Length: 112
Length: 115
Image (cartoon, rainbow over all chains, first blue to last red; front, side, top):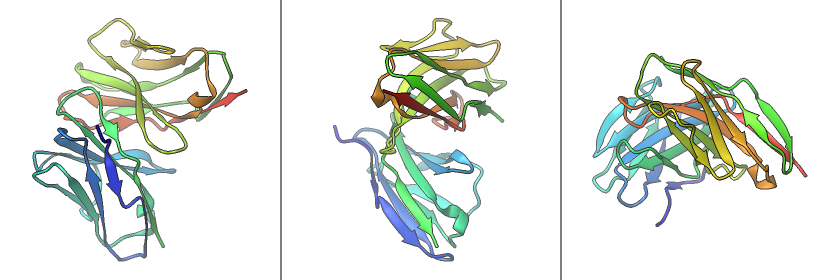
């Protein structure tokens, strides 16, 4: 079974731009969660989607948004990029309320 | 709000020896899971071991075991017979079973394994 895939793996943007990251979960997994990982703040939960509905949202500004499609693939969008948005963005998929989330390799976003 | 604290930013262990990584958490919930995740330099996070709060018996997975002290809100990870491949960042994580799949992570412990 293929693992969680994230595209692109690396991205460089400039301040003020917007970016869209994509996550394809493991086949059959309908829950997709997003996390931001930075050296200063560590791993922080962004949001979780299940069946195209946002179930949980972390404490991030409205510039961070996401969505999930009917095939469970998910995208997250960051608008008006700031230098502090530079981070590794991790996606994780799971069956709903199971005990294990499977993480993707992440997208490394650099904002210049 | 739930918090997870890992007080050891870095740990070092000799190959074949045993090392224990510490984790404490704070929650008012009774139904939750605790996890240890490993993030090697390649960055792909993988689950090492999990513990359900209702279970008193400590979880074990081969060379990995936990010491779960519910009253003290402590959840340490013991790695026996350490191997070079164990070198990685280790994250302790908490999940409230009434809040979907949201994980709250600790700050991580970097484990170095000396040959």
